Image 1 (tube, rainbow, N blue to C red):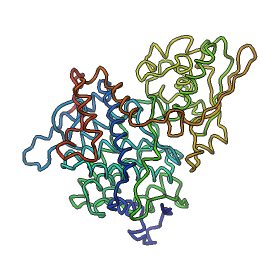
Image 2: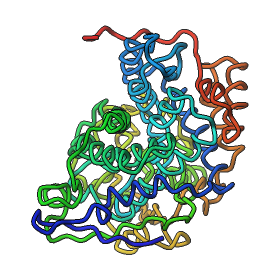
Image 3: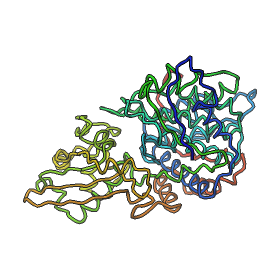
Image 4: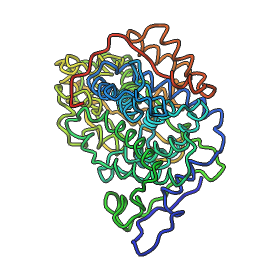
Length: 504
């Protein structure tokens, strides 16, 4: 890996194109380096993982609405040279940008797929829907799709390592637009000039504030990454037609760094693979066993264990206070440090409860389990003993856990913390956990069998048995698939809700 210094340049400095971050990413995208077997294996896992959580969300309102929008744009014009893309849950071929949109919402709705956390945080699996949609539309085979996904993961995760967005309340999908554009460029074998222009456009159109993840979190949370993927598809199309984009997009005098991030005097160090170096970033990401914000994964595992070992903790009368000592991010984004009263509101939306570690810890402690539907049900959130115990749970930043959160050493990097429980009888319980059980360094690291089991579990009652086996049979052969087989890398379900009418 090579570190690239990225900073604002005055217009009169004359920054050379080859020194722009967007150009360097475009060069990474056109590097023909082979995808290593371990990376290809993990890409298969994540395609299965994405499909699992998409299937589980097919009847949820945001997904139904997004699917309806895509269905209003079928790829039916015989004059078009491409075949169109598939949308999870339904038959037919649709315009690729709208398939990316619908599938992106389905994948993101339950907050249940993979994650990578560094200077910024991300769900790099959000790259898969737009890259897959374009692969199906353009008639790409499985090997090309694997190469494109490897690039998408690499670019987003390298940007996440080097550039913090949330510090300035910019939503994390600003790293996703450029990475999806780069991944599509690799998939299609486009020239670096086209990819460069698409990266600039994708970034320019996907910078938005973090209010989408603050306060009363709305259904837009699932749509935000899907919008970035859709913009990446459109940016590629526009660049292929010879159109240009704002430049230099990161480094310009009025660019992203100067006005949205740390300002004209800032310097960032962004790591990128050197020419000929394999794209391995996906191996540093991690998926979710539980449908909740990633920083909650380890806490769910610890709470389940504590509730089993100490069942008295499930009774609010037995507990005086519970403090989760954790990282800066966990405390201020999903903890009591956020200052969001909604994080203690039993009538809050699912999206809000998903970002409330006090709520999540309480329910996992009481239930000894976590369910992607039942744990968020209104009747579950409103249970009186839960509300009473929930309001005794707070978070506190701990400098050591913050340091470990940001550590570059994979053996030290951690997303958990230490819980201190004061009992009503004067007793005290103290436990800690560094990583989730499903983490590569956890008690039960996820492997292929776990991804397949997750798909089967979430598809139960949604897909027929034959459809489950058909999809898994294709997904597990992903690097070897022909273009017609890639076109079938989707699922069809019966009895899905009909989308409400909109403008289209």
